[in-house]
Amino acid sequence: MPANYDIIVIGGGHAGIEAALAAARMGHHVLLLTLSVEKIGQMSCNPSIGGLAKGNLVKEVDVLGGEIAVLADKTAIQYRMLNRSKGPAVWSPRAQNDRLQYARQARTTLQGTVNIEIKEEEATELIADHGSISGLRTVSGGEYHARAVIVTTGTFLNGLMHIGLESFRGGRLHEPDAGRLSESLKSMGIALGRLKTGTSPRVSVASVDVSRLRIQHGDEDPVPFSFRTNRTIEEQIPCYVTHTKEETHAIIRRNLDRSPLYSGKITGTGPRYCPSIETKVERFAGRPSHLVFIEPEGVDASEFYLNGLSTSLPFDVQLAILHSVKGLENAEITKPGYAVEYDFVRPVQLYATLESKAVRNLYFAGQINGTSGYEEAAAQGIVAGINAVLRIRDEKPFVLKRYEAYIGVLIDDLVTKDTIEPYRMFTSLAEHRLILRIDNVADRLMHCGVRYGLIDPAQYQVYVDQRAQIEQAIEGLKKTVVSPGVANPVLAERDEVEIPEARGGQNLYQMLKRPHVKYRDIEAMGCVKLPPEIARRVEIEVKYEGYIKREELAIARLRELERERIPPNFDYTGVSGLSNEARAKLTQVRPADLDQASRIQGVSPSEILRLLLYLKKQP
Figure 1 (cartoon, rainbow, N blue to C red):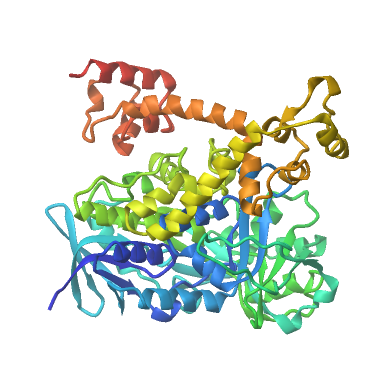
Figure 2 (cartoon, rainbow, N blue to C red):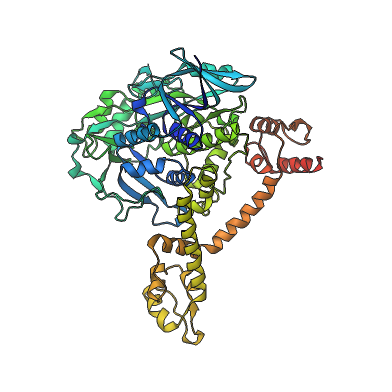
């Protein structure tokens, strides 16, 4: 007999976890379908969370009420804050994690959440009724009905694995693919593309000579991802760094004819910013070496992950490559590297809510939308989960703008620009990154988590109290004037210009704006001592006040364009002066406003002006 749910989530990866948890925590009955319960939350690639821009996504998901940051903190074995030597706009946290513990914690969280039911089934066919999704059928003949469906199949949709010139069906090593769902999506008018990704070999810990490698420790003062985490790990496990050499590259070049990438077996487009080692050797022929990061897979794990050696070359070639690398001369491969091709949904077919334009109440999140990475998947998952709930409640959708969150940048790029290669988040993609810092993430987004019932009001009150403390401290700096006699000894230590005795003093707010003056220097002048995190926030907000105000003015101009809304079924044929390409792109993307329209590739500024004038004339 058909079973009825509010929402069905297909897939138990990082996107599926966040989508299911968000919908269930908002009070709706959720069915999570997965090919393997044991593989829920699997870290298919390297055992880490975060990184440049990716760590920002994790922090944003956290203050919305998501789980990835909590899971990362529960299973962290090392923390590093990247880009500390640069400005706070590009600081980003990263953690090494225990792979098995991460999956176990994810599974335990889902199983312990009210409103979530988990079934080990393969979805093969989606069911739609009058243009709206109504359920699905599974390979076992089961039929499940729902008011919304979220597809988060990752690399499993029609997955094809490659090791050397051998190919076999699968979404991950030793796991089957989900091939039949592709045909169902196509029958609904959803266009699919083909992408490729890959992973590095794993090697036995005992077979690696770490004494010959450069050690990479974690931070001395580790900072957790989640605002809900009250502990830090006592002992961090180090990573190691080595590099390839000319001998390595010669081995790769001699065997390119045995590579599926260069023999024509792989047709999908691979990631530009995380290429295989054979692609790096070919693309950067002049480089004598490439870095390899040797990452432990857990506290007591028996395997290292070789980050930087992604490859799909045959097993014997992989072994020869490793044995040419310092410290890996006797390495034993426990799992070979491989490439996987898979179907993905062209995300330009989605609204910013991640709902399909072709089928109502059908959502897509994660790698199926052409992205790469656990963090990008989790960000899409929570947005899809929230919006699926809001859709069935007939409430206003949840859409983040580019100036509100990295999540907004990610989704806007996906639905506005046509993805032809796996998308990876970078700080350079966020034009307002000074506003999108990790230190102000709660200021920007926590109220949304509260609004949707995903953040406990008591937790929110802690943030409110901290915000009040920051503002009070800044006001105190403006009101406190110190004499040259007190300030000048500290300024001299920081190579700052001293205050002339005749001036009679300077307030601490202006003092803190000086480039080399830190909040601890202000404390040395007699200012109140603050908790480290509050002091860091005060220092950033004071030092960057001018830049932040400039960004806010730019954002205000963008909001003017956002006010020029474009009707969902707007007919662009009536707008004179548009090129055929612009009309086609605008019709395909169907931008919500002029701001989004201005970012569509192939639409010129003059065409945006023509569109603005046309909209102004409409009643």
